[in-house]
Image (cartoon, rainbow, N blue to C red; front, side, top):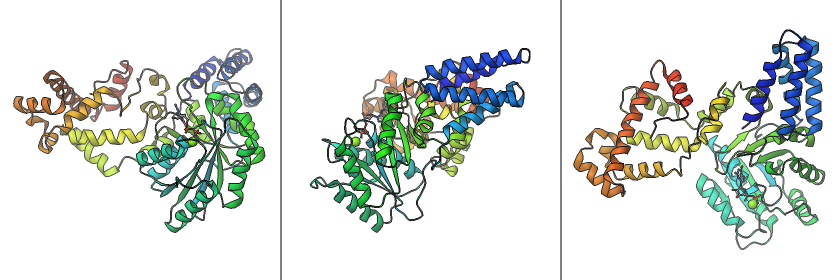
Length: 446
Ligand code: GDP
Ligand code: MG
């Protein structure tokens, strides 16, 4: 997520030398200034960050250690604004969140992502479809909710968004939902109508927090529009969307500081799991490539069932990993989101990240073939791949629409992968994994 900034922070730290301490500090700060501006961090914020680091480091006596600790303190200050962090549940459920923002900023997508994030934490979530402006808005939300298996309240015959929201709120109370997320209509630019509509909503039902979805692709504009919104409606949090691909990254570091509204979540891709909670102290660790073990544990523990994980591990060790286990693992991986985002949470892995091709678990042709193959197998064959003799393979080929060569190749790969997994689960597992990754990301997993 922050690889470019992380890399330049590392380089600047390396510039600090014992001899000529003051000169080396200046060099380090110059390097930081260049890369912060290049990453599109606001120039005023950049100046503030550098001044504070300069003063603090000198106070402590110039060394790499004091530079790093000053950098951490300053970044933490910059990223922290008064207000809530992460998702905060109201003492009186359902916690009701109004999602606002301009059209196309990612409101509907972020509503789904937030619902999914909460669902994984075992919360009962209801989503209200209150965008009655855009054609197809309700259908879009319905589709998302179906995908993440979250309940939706919608009414295609109703023209009054406030009425829908009131009905949704009543349902959320009656059916004891923990959270109600309200997706609203946006506009192409800030206008009176939009603001009045949102104001009316906040006046007519009890809202716990108003989130503003800001499109990170709009760069510094994201902060400016957030400020105008905040002047009309008091915002409680920002969700920064589309923070993937080639965004320069800086906006995430300066938006809270400029708007005085806490950045609460970041959307990092089009898929539902591409969503991360923004906790300043954790982000600082990631910026310094010290990983976010806490975040990683949180993300995985809610998805990986501990008992199941132990069962799989013991199967792998014994070389008994079968196709059924493989399907289960795939399903779990899908819920975890992108491989890249997981890896960036591991300490010292930022460099490896660039060598890893992101694996798209749902759409890769290879996986589609594998799934077709597995679905043509009998239950027995899935549990015991050894049963697959020549005649059974012929049957699989017909059933899956793959030719015999493809069938053989996949089965061979699977055997290899299962051997590999067995090896990785051994004493030198972590080392083997690192070797495998640094080997240009050419893992031999099917
Ligand atoms: P809304 O008009 O504010 O509700 O915006 P939508 O949620 O419909 O999103 C507009 C477009 O942006 C859609 O095509 C989404 O798939 C896309 N989008 C939203 N969030 C993200 C994100 O974090 N990353 C990427 N790559 N695309 C996103
Ligand atoms: Mg929408």
